[in-house]
Image 1: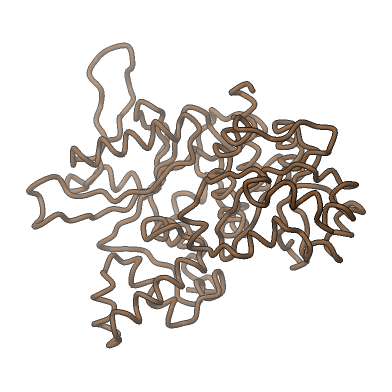
Image 2: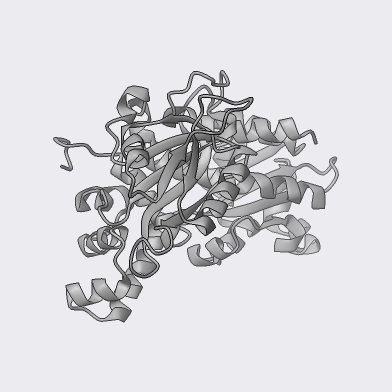
Length: 398
């Protein structure tokens, strides 16, 4: 498999997630070509709430599957036994069909005998995606094809984290993608900084510009010394350890990785204790989060670059409680705890302020992570930061 084919698949994931020049069906076609599969399955509700296979155009086999065979599918039955929490722990874990159910048992099952045989479902490879519920992804080959192998597992394991991120963006950013053009970026309450793999700043919005110009900020920019590259400022974190981690995340995202989150601390001695003042998410450089004109037509990713989204922890901009209840199905109590946590306070502080037990708050935190699809508190902070972009002063939720 050529590396550029893998990069094309990653491009399609984000393009489909933002409905930008590609559809989920285009992605399904690409995955089937890449994996030499005859079917791709990812069942989710559409805009009207009706379940459907996101990756393929509906056909007679989908009709049969939805009406009867979904209940007999041994792979889906296995997925139903896995909790969202376990899916988070197994993130990126790709398995072959025989690793889920013994091959001898599968070929003798009612599902395969009555349905799988005729619908190109002899061999399967798949993984689980943890959102508000566990979502199984499957790619299938017919009996005339070779079984999936270890090389296929390595390929799909590289794509699964991007697919998880893309589905999160579909769920949380789709309502606002049309308003996230360059003109709207300066109104965002989060910093948006696009850098290349050498940390040279390609673009920053107004919030980021204010952050970088603040002499007390944990992030800053510096003009390089005279040389071949001129006129470009480089992004850096004032804390040496955090700067090294930030550079690693940017380099990985610029190479096509799914990115990651971190907290950035004040430089040693600047504040009492080990104080984190900024939350940062590093992700691929997406068209809707950049005003750069150096874009790849038809894709959502600027290759060789990364986006750094920043949010102040000590003066956070959190979304209203009602927005969190509507977006993620949180109860009002859970949403209030979520907003407090996004402000950087500890579970102990929340319990003390709300006059409830620490066990109660910890239970609420577990529920919040499950409902938001967050992999942990840092990922949750990213989700809250992105959710903050979905309201502005004077909006329904203001």
